[in-house]
Image 1 (cartoon, helix red, strand yellow):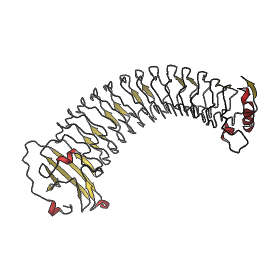
Image 2: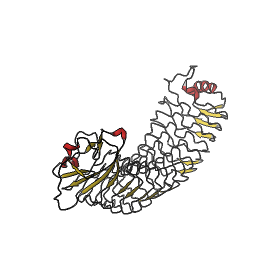
Image 3: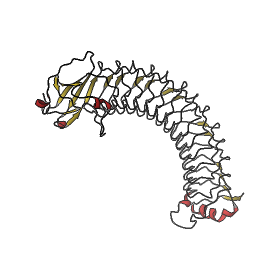
Length: 482
């Protein structure tokens, strides 16, 4: 029958248990895999087996390979290539199904229609990395006692159809990465999911790159604390209406819509973000999104906004006047490559605690004006390329920005080809920075290609330094003193 040592492994089996409790699997063995261990149960590298394997033994589990009964084990070596039918008849109910089929790459089909999950509490990683599964019907599953479903279908990268129509998720607390990297799923109907007790949805649909139809209309998210990367890399989603989402308990929301490249409509008008501390890369590369209503956003506890809107290349206007940024420490690349952005309201920004401004507006080459009169950079360490390639800005007022402690402002205004006037009245060049004729000194690239700069306002004490820098950049504006 193609199994090595079959004479020693074969045995007489007799099923005396009253209720059918079966797992049916079809595996495929290729020529290159002959006489190598093929797993049809938990293929993890962990030293300690998981509960289902701890419980399974030759007394309570009958193993059949192509209808021939064998001594129970979780893997076999096969002598002939082809498809093999594996049947496990269980005389007990499994409470912990975590990692049950983890990394069982040879499984091409699973029939669990007679598998009793009525006592199962943990389904975390149950089918994770089953990369050759294409269809999965779990409509017979009783999940009424299940608490954990995190990573349940993680990296089932060839899964096309999945039936979860009878899932009872009322007691589930963790759905983190549940469908992450299910790259061939195009549609998911989760309208019957009850999520009142769920605490984590982190990465739930992360990298479902072909998912274009998603029904989560009845999700109750009032107790969810983690939505980090929830829809990240859902590259085919065009519309998301999350107006019913209650996010009052949410603390982590970084990368939530990261690289949703096809997203054109996003309704987050009722988002409560008062407890969020991380908004890094929230909308990174949402490059088909043309507008965003963030009027409900409360950002009083946010500490990082790094790359928050980076590469939102179709957004033309952003009103962030309601943003409270008093606790923010990082604004690096916040609006980088928002190439169609013409209007932005950051007048309310409090930047006294920000350390990183580097590339904040880099590549905003259609930005016409910006009010930074409230900006202070008392703690700033890096303002490199802050306005790099802002080709249409004509006036920049940075009168409240004192740069005495900053060592990094390489190319801060480089390629601001329309820049006419600059107010740098509080710019202080750190005494430790070498202002000399050193070749390739980074400080000499501050005004590179600012060919239209006509007027600059500086502190009188900085005159000699600025004259040398301006000369090195080949620009000769009128110098005025504050």
